[in-house]
Length: 114
Length: 114
Image 1 (cartoon, rainbow over the protein chains, first blue to last red):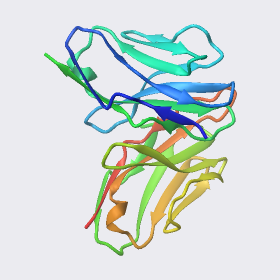
Image 2 (image 1 turned 45 degrees about the vertical axis):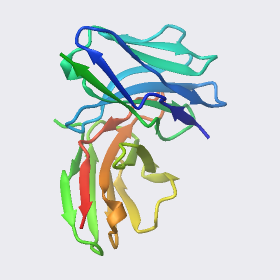
Image 3 (image 1 turned 180 degrees about the vertical axis):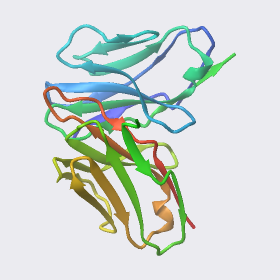
């Protein structure tokens, strides 16, 4: 079974600072996909960034970047220049090439303070 | 146009009633899902359909019955509602292969059973 672990239930960061959210996963498969989703208070699930396991280069989307360590099965999200609008639940998710569903971690609640 | 739309957005009902939540996607995806988000924000897969065929049926009570009339629709019918069914239910869709995409989520349906 594939599991996703987010060890930080809550985090806080000041505006303009950088914060890193941790995620580890467990799988015996070689081909898979990793995602970070953001869920603001509006409840909408928004994709932040995705990473294909076969790509060695870490994905980047504007202020969001990942540190993907395949051997360690680690997939952390770095948010640079944090903004108040980044306040949300962040979910790490995992999908295998042969699976039919995203498996989610329990989420990290991020609060960005002025 | 909304990519994945589910209705209703809010649903308040009494114990014992039967209710349905509808979901439609206009992305041309071949896979659709139902997720349940509990009060602790944990997202758990309930069902997964690929090309109208049921692929994943997690340990969900058989009071929950998904129906996929075509690839663009996946409805969820719940019989004999119980207090513990109160949660947010998300519909999502994705492309399964060539290459697989992330899941796109509807806005969620907050179900409250009283």
